[in-house]
Image (cartoon, rainbow, N blue to C red):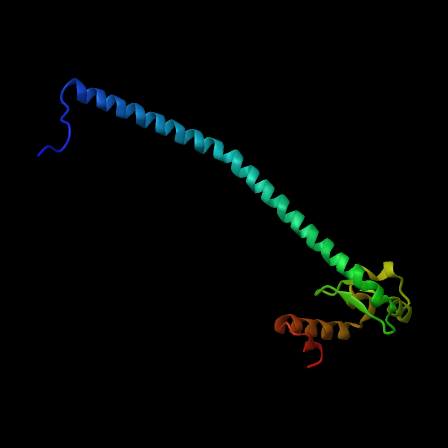
Amino acid sequence: MRCGPVFAGAGLGQLGSAFDHMLEVIESRDQELRDSAGPSEARVGERTMALEQEIAERQRAALHLQESEDFPRVDEAAPGIISGTTDGIIRLSNSAFRKMFGYTEEELIGNSVSELLLTPAHARELGCHVAKLLETKRGRALHP
């Protein structure tokens, strides 16, 4: 039974040289790939950040569009209405609310509810209710 070719002398030396050359070529190509990966990874990272920023901008635009589409109904409502972020920043107010409190839209939008409209005690109570709302994720947290 024969297990494979038997090399001796010069044939074995040629095989060893060929193997060494093949190994050098492979190592050289591996190094080229490692060297070129750095700029590619940087470009991928930059593009990922750009896409994340674009997504955030689109989400803000979608929210703004939704608010602007809903605004005519809100602005026509008889009761005073404001809408804001979870940390109390006013994002929307209707004309009835502005008339009740004597503020212009520019004075309200982007400012804190607690700073403009609440006493310190009421601001703490509102903060407690908002925390409960966020914790339970239910709209009824303000009226337990």
